[in-house]
Image (cartoon, rainbow, N blue to C red; front, top):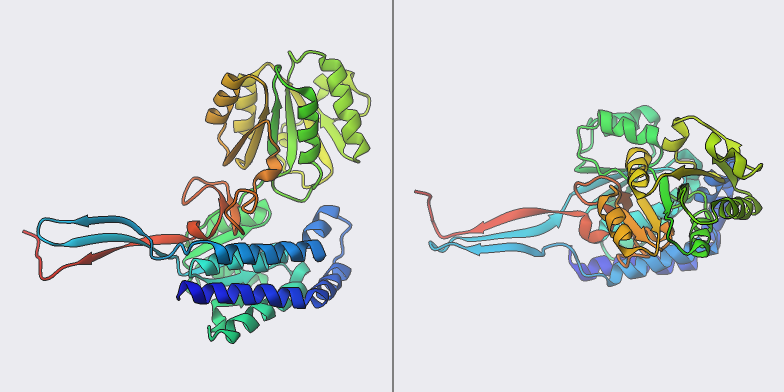
Length: 395
């Protein structure tokens, strides 16, 4: 498909979303009313308001402006016998995106895959059914307006059993699966799928407060990391160098600020003396857990070596932050912590395709193959070898 045609589809969809704001919000309100949960994290991910619609529109416009990632020459070699060997980028083919709660994925993730020339199968959660169906209708209006078959974007209304069969490779031909959901979903797909997958894994992000740091900066970065609890780039764990000057005062101040935000501050027994507001949890399991809730865990470490060891053992491999004025320690931390995005004196909340300048993202990969971090259109291609000859044979 020509790049200009893909871009026209995306820009028309952007206008349709803008023109149908109220209908989108109305369908979403029906979804919210039907949800039987008080979990504020789920409601936050499910909700669509005018600001989220603005985000969808912006993402579509940005993706349309991006260079087309398809048919790029990655390697070229002309042999002495005249054989021309070229390696080019090509679409994956058909991508299945499985996701929970977030209707904006129906627009932003699909747009990213579409820009790379792929066909997209969308499998959203039951909780966002009406929102997703209406947004898919808008996709189809834009596709049909430009003479593109609407099968390029398909929304799957499948039972749990039918979805599991699809994941196992039974039925429709799928070239790539991208799961965006809880650990149980991801683990099932990793275990059962015969199709290649890109894992958009859990957050459980750590922030390390070094002994040499601007403590007010550290406070601000931690607070910013908990301002939205439902996002995968939130901060869940804070590890603090026990040699930090004014340790007792600073931990008390941090707990007070977080408590005012309605954040439950959890720690192990070693910090109990620092604040009576702490919830004590000595289990190792809490260190592995992504909260997606108004909770944060604090602990002390001997220094950077222990901080790196703790983060590499327990984090989800998504994002990690060091707050320090010591450049050498910052470089050591960023080089040795095994996460997709490493920050020195900046908030983990920037781990996002739009914030990184790659436009809309289909996911944030926490694995090392095929790519790591926010996945934009240029990461949703594979490659082929094209060899041009005039009768050459190998001798």
